[in-house]
Length: 167
Image (tube, rainbow, N blue to C red; front, top):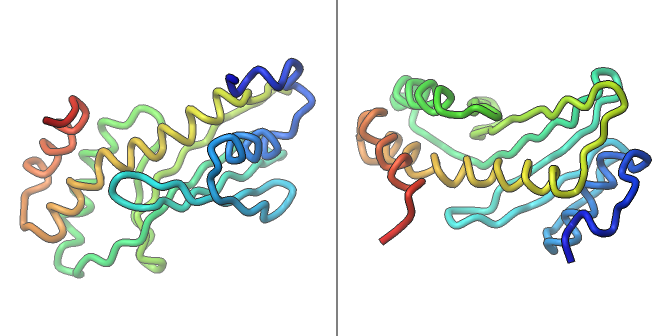
């Protein structure tokens, strides 16, 4: 059954309820932190990603944060920041950032639903899957810069190659 088949009138459904439905559909481990926030774990090829979605009534935005831990040596941070700039130049939806205090790589995206718009289950599913796909795509490049002494441009070529499949 398609995700959207259960909801004929999605206008009355809270965005986090919709996210919870998608998480249940995929059997993702999740925790409803608050009425307006949910956290889940989604397994990728490279690692398990922590994803939090939060609804803000103030600006009518469904915010997604996808994180994973990373402990790069301090001397690699300039190359990581250069790599993040190159990555973000390629990301049209969402962006990566580094949270130094938490030692986490972060992918962020905000879906603006102004004017009483609503997100359907297919849209929420696409949002989550796009976040994981972006993290999966660029994870090898960040690892190469951090641990294999590759230049950001050289490492990013690996990520671009990943987009075309595997042999």
